Every structure is written in C-alpha cells, then in structure tokens.
Image (cartoon, rainbow, N blue to C red; front, side):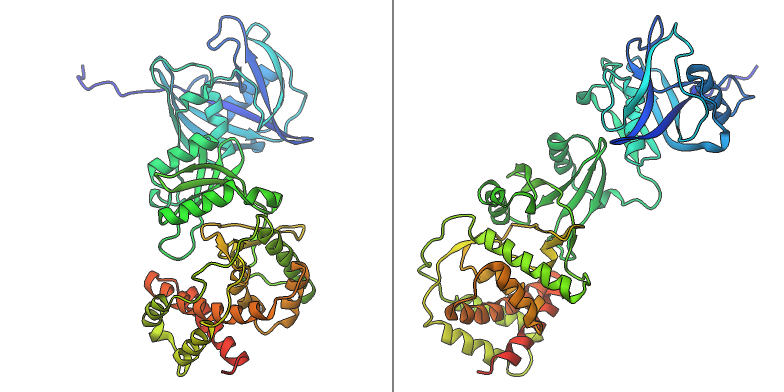
Length: 464
C-alpha cells in the first residue's frame, strides 16, 4: 500500500448567466433558494455540480439549466465568463466556472419548486438582495471583465453578500497593467472607501514624472478619477476650488467625491469627452468649440467676486533669472534680449484686478463631448489672478488663427483691454520660459516644444 499523501481535491461547479437586453440595460436570470438547501432564502444563479468524469463542464451547464429553468441551450452558444476559486465561511473550497449564454429556447420557469420559490430577470447593475456572496463575486468578476478571481471568505463571514466583507480578488490577465501601474495600497483603500470596490485601474497620467492620475472602474459600474498631487500646495488649491467656485459650473466640471490631505489624494467623478489636444476638427467646428471655450472661461472668471490688483503684480525678477538659466539651452539668438525687454517694460504697467482662474487652461485639460459641449478638468493651479492668466497657455492653440481668437472672445463676451493685451504678451513670454525650464528638469519634451513655439510666435508678432 502506498504511503503517499492523498492529493487535495476540490469540487467543480458550473453557473449559467442567462443574459438578455432589457429596456434600461442588461438583465440576468436569478432564482431564490428555498427549503432545506444551503443558503435558503438567498438569490443565486442557476448552477450545479458535474455528475461525474463522463460529463464535461459545458454538458453539465446545459443539463443544469434545463433541469432548473426548463431552457434549452445549444452548446455552441455557451461562452466562458469567469472562474472563481471560492472558500466558504466554513472552510470548504471549490472552483466555480461561470458561463454566459445569450441565446436559448423556451421561457425559463421554476422546475424544482422544492428548492426554488422565485425566479426572474434582474438588471445586472441592480441585483436583488440577499444574494449568495459566492454568486455575487462571480457576477462582479464577470461585470468587470475579470477572467479569474479568488473569493476566500473568512470564518464568521456571512453566506449572504455583505459589502463590508468583500473578499473578491481579481487576478490580472496577460497584457493587463502590472501592480506598479496602480496607486499604492493606501490610495486604493482611500478610493474604495469613497466609491466601493474598484475592478480596474488604468494609469492616465501625463508624460511628466510628477503626474499621478488613474481611471478607476467600479465593479458595480461607474467611473471615477483618482489623483495624487505632487505637493501640499497643489492639493490645497484643487480641493479649495472643488469646494468653492467649481460647483457653480454645473455639468462642465467633475464633482469632488473625496479628499485626503495626508495622502494628497482626491477622487472625482468622470466627465464626458476627449481632450481637445491633438484632436482634428473642421474649421467651422473649431470656431464653435472656441466660442464654447470662451464662454467657459467667462463662467470661471465670474464664479466669485473679483479683487483689486495685488501689490506685487509685477514680474518676479529673481524667478525670471532662474527660468532663464534653466531654459537657456533652448533659447535662440535674440530670445533672451526679447524677454528682458518685455520684463523691463512690464515694470511700469499698472496691475489688473484679480478673478478666479483655472491656472492651466489649455487644450489638454479641455474635453469635447459627443454633443459638442466642452468640459474642463485639472484645477491644481487654480488661484486668484488677472483673467488673462487663463489665456496664456490657450493662446498657443490660436497662434496663426485669428478666427479662433475672435471666436473665443465672442464666447467670452468682451474684448481684451489694451492693458490686458500687453500683459498677455509678457505673461506668455514668461510662461514659455517657465515651460522650457520645467520641461527640461522633469522630462516633459512637450512643455519644452510648446515654450519654443510660443516664443517664436511672440517674436514674429511683436517687434521690439
């Protein structure tokens, strides 16, 4: 007799996700257990065990669906949905194979009244309660697109689904982003306390090394963005903006869901649309977009009361010298003299009243929705400043296109004053210098190129 230890063996069960398209979204068939069976009174998918080694998993699925619901399924219509390695609160483990079926014959009905007292189709995003936690885990994995999941419950956990005892762990598939592309554990836990379990994290950061932004897709549906700021000042400015003037813009902006000052992290809702940066539209549509962008800028600047000009409104000469040192490798002949002349002339300009500004108002932070509406994101540089501050980075988009500048001003509701026009030139030159220095130091070639492009346009348009 062999003394070799017996190999660990676990039962395999199959679950059928009969899916149909309802009037307001996809629906799945569920049945409620009854009688003396396990989990009596809880909702579950039609399911069962293999009868023996003679039966494969598809055959078992077809048989169980017919026995429990009366539907007839052609094996060619069976699609794999998810696999869940489950452990019950009592410690027993099993492997559950979940299959999707979208086509069948005969209407489902209760075939085994001794173990089932209700059956019906329910929206996939509004599942009934109470539901078996194991079944809910399989459906959550299915909805999130996960192919393999572990659902090991702890002793004392409820058999019924309890959001406070969520044990589902999705195993990434080949080609999915590695752990390093997700937020650190503390940030993920903060986000999930705010919006519930997250199925997938997609890194949507900008190319610069200090950018940390992820799109979080919830297991039960919904999309949010999670952002970790590079410093306390950025975090404070963005949170203040969300809690003060941003709500006045309505659907044109995201909504703050949660903020954590210690983590310097926020969770915000997703807004529709794609960034205008790099997008191509016909000239007429471009003009419509810039009118809407102008109207949005006007709404931002009117979202709070204005204030008198700051006492130190002139250029910071020390900062200018630092920017020049950092950007000098990218400057062309005559660039530094051009900038210093602008700075010298700006010393005598009077100050402009301060309004709420976005601070980084440019095409990559402006989104176009399918209906042509425009939304704006990223408020970490928001602070009181002259209104022309929000035209500085946007002006690169209308360089050589006076029709777009005119469209912006039409939407904005007024023309710039002569003083604002002069400040716009000076501030644009300083911003180009700052962009070249920052882009060089932080590995953002786009900023360097934009700074060079802006400076070239300014020198061509303004002969000093």
